[in-house]
Image 1 (spheres, rainbow, N blue to C red):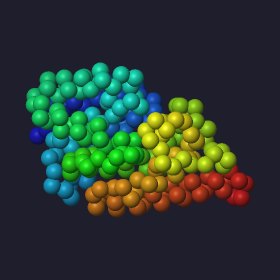
Image 2: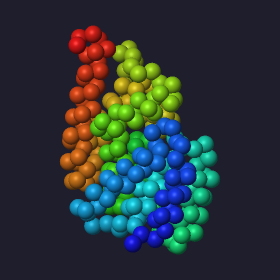
Image 3: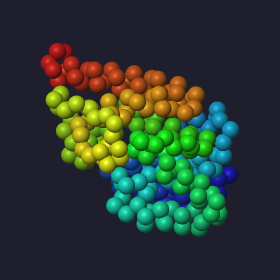
Image 4: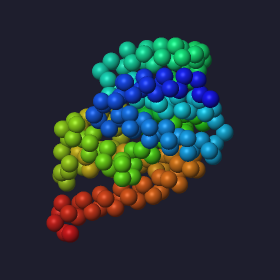
Length: 213
């Protein structure tokens, strides 16, 4: 039994229930489900995986203008439901170091628990739902869908990565790269199919844009 799980779910639902960039509570639920699936093939601390999966976006600077305040809220919530400081530190080691942007210049070595949560989060960024979330995110921030004269960026740091580009370029700048960055065998297998879904979509999109289909 995972300590305080019901309370943690309620906390996250309150924090992200009305989030509008594609990092809302439904995203969290999918990440948790994927993490549970990956867990079946790994020897890892279930409580740490599930709690970190629920909390991983609450303090992210994509969804809050005050990450420090949200970090404090996370810590207070975890301590309040009965976790100790060591557990809280482990949770933050995962959520602070698992994102794509956090690993653009320095590859962070995650615990197996962190690798599972990272894989689950990245799986929800690819495939059919990943496509939908990409356009949802781009629309939220006013990105254009496509401009063939704007080439995908390379060698970015986090500041450059956070600058707006085009929705289609995001597939080349990030999403197509995630399959080869999966950590666990289960995630690698799932990613193969989701990668193909995205490649088929982008190919069709460009063909239709160019009027060749």
